[in-house]
Image (cartoon, rainbow, N blue to C red; front, side, top):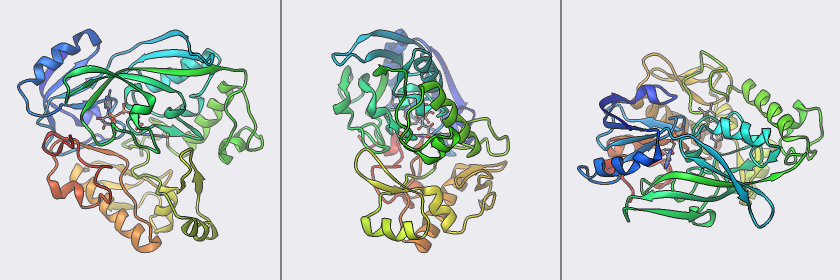
Length: 370
Ligand SMILES: Cc1cc2nc3c(=O)[nH]c(=O)nc-3n(C[C@H](O)[C@H](O)[C@H](O)COP(=O)(O)OP(=O)(O)OC[C@H]3O[C@@H](n4cnc5c(N)ncnc54)[C@H](O)[C@@H]3O)c2cc1C
């Protein structure tokens, strides 16, 4: 384990902003985890966990609690579940993209639609990562985690993780650090049905058809690239967290009204109907590429916020506030941030735009929710 003091966190996140970590530990071997636990004893509260930094905004002043960067790697096929699915055990720091490729190469279906999502496997249950009809909740069996409240290692089955739409018991909480994860995937020549029109059109197939997992993954990647939802596909828009906002749930009456206005609506496995946050930004009049706050603008490729030279975390939160306000005024719908706020945020700095106290609340030491 490498431990550094005062390391700027900006370079550890895809938005490329945020101040230093008082203590930064890079964990590459799980056997060193007890050393990190010992190190944290000098600090109050739970430490902050970081994966690839693709869904976080770090405060400009940085983080006074120790930051653990999960960089452990490894994928092991560990047998069969009772229902015949193949069980795969993965280290939390393993890149999700590599896990998806590995499972597709082994002829397994269950994760192929998650191709192109940046980040580590350990972060996937935090917001029940999902895309194009698949979610981590479809395949997660259990996780092992360090429980900072009980100060011991625990095993949580999928039900105990409380996975819901872009949410779980881990979202907005610093209580657990996920260490290893077990997934169950089905061996099959054909992947999951194509539920998204754009992916089906990319394959020139009707919605509902099934193709081999590798073909579905290729189509999803092509669609994601066009929308700038793959890291590195656009130099100008590279400082991104993908979606900044949750797709809000709408009532049947709102859904009917929005549909008449041409909104992009989707039904999710939890039964909710949601309107795309990108569509709401477009509807509220945000033009592609337009500035929203100093150093923060709308991406050139789709309706989300990205950072430029001169951006700060304070500027990014200001931009979030501007979008929330204008979308509310123009559409009557309240957006809430999907990203996690790490580090030492002033209470008012991050709470001004957060409609729901748990989601998007700062996880730093001063505002730890546990
Ligand atoms: C271009 C782009 C496209 C994206 N597309 C999608 C998409 O289609 N669907 C989607 O759901 N998300 C998407 N995201 C968001 C992001 O990639 C995911 O949320 C991803 O799971 C974050 O992984 P990470 O390792 O970067 O986590 P980080 O950003 O480092 O951390 C995210 C949160 O997880 C916590 N965390 C990280 N690791 C652990 C751990 N081991 N134990 C406990 N807590 C942990 C952190 O404390 C933080 O709260 C996209 C992001 C980008 C930049």
